[in-house]
Image (cartoon, rainbow, N blue to C red; front, side, top):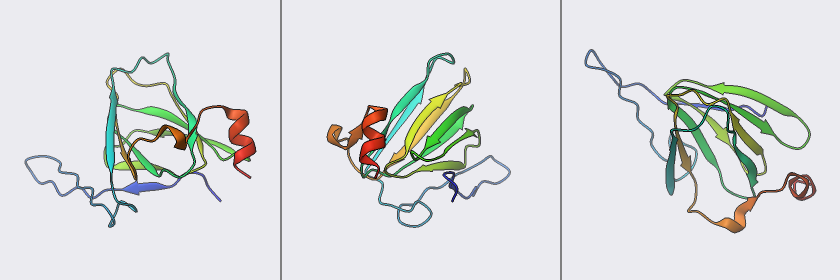
Length: 132
């Protein structure tokens, strides 16, 4: 089973330009309760380094690119996020890290719930214990 699952959003644009649409409970497989974006990230500084107990997320690089490491505690996979309409699904209990941000990277993340610090697992050893 692959750790990598893409969510592809339709481009409804025309000769005037692109128009990407994300609809909750349709193409997005959950109700969107929060969104956030990362920009001006430093290419040599990695981010993430955590897992969530219950939160589902989808990460899109709406501009630029970054490399995402996905780790379920058994296998690890790396993938570039580099298309504005193609998002990476980050399910619960998957450790994820973001590396090698391009200078122009803008990462948009859709989340299934509001921020809750108690949902985070920020220590890799603790993640390995809790994932079983």
